[in-house]
Length: 474
Image (cartoon, one colour):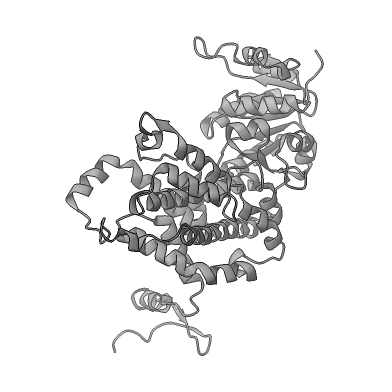
């Protein structure tokens, strides 16, 4: 058979969806899946037999034969588990490749691992690219957002195939663009996932307020969220939440039967660690992550609930006076989302400067307008705002929005917390905003304390001089 233009390794859920997308868009494919006796046998061949768009593809269980089936330079896309499994596949692949061949990692790898792999393979004349892929199973099949990083010449050799399968923005351009060198692609995908953590947490907090304090049914909340989809808060995550809220199980709702313990796969933790390392206040990402960790100790939480009872001032007799309009809550929710996006893009900006990646923030926002999990109406506004070079909370329109809706966010948090609801991300949003617009903070006290016990110095406001001492009693 003729040589294939593109190879894909790893036929899990995402790998299969991407393979069907590639084949359906006209890319000739070689597909490889490992052989595990009794568990994974003839996976690629059987997969090809299932779908008509794959009939021209070729399936392999032998890695050497798979590599030989590809045209030069070989373009190989990995869809395997991050970490040691990725390294194991690379180690097996490298001896079979020729200088100029390209390996693309489409998994959620840590950006420093990607840089390490890139350096190691470059020494052997090979290209390694970290390609963030967002959109889930459906996005991978119908058009994901793709964030490729690596050498520019490597991207030129694969862009035709990646851009062909990507989602399209409102102008018909692919939601795939060269991000930057080194581990930039996976860094940007990591921050995407961090923003996603906070977006999900915000929806959960608003749901809790409506369900527990306002005592709305899931159907009623779904109706509210569905109406919000016609406004500036519209997003893919809000859209799927409407679907989730409407699913029944017997006389109740399926959501009520789901254990209230949320798991995570690592990218939220990586984003939090990166923010700390780079000195960026990405508090909403970290609070969303820690909220998941807290949820995981379900037994302990239930024991504590019996030992530390909460007496809410909200009861059946006075509940009505605490219930705000749905629009009130919507404004609070949107302001928190703006803060979340501000923090996420600031993290990307600082990383770009630190690692000399020269990242194009407006272009990153553009490729996140469709295909990815955090696509939203807000995201569609961000390329134009970021084109000005301003951070989001420096933009005049968003500043005016923050000014007009800040009180709504404060009051929403007050009501929720009065009723014993945890609101880590809504609270983090207002705390960050309060700190961000505080022209005269109390951090002088902390710097004075640091100098008192450790002679860490401080800068005088009146002279600008950096000095030490003056606070200890004589």
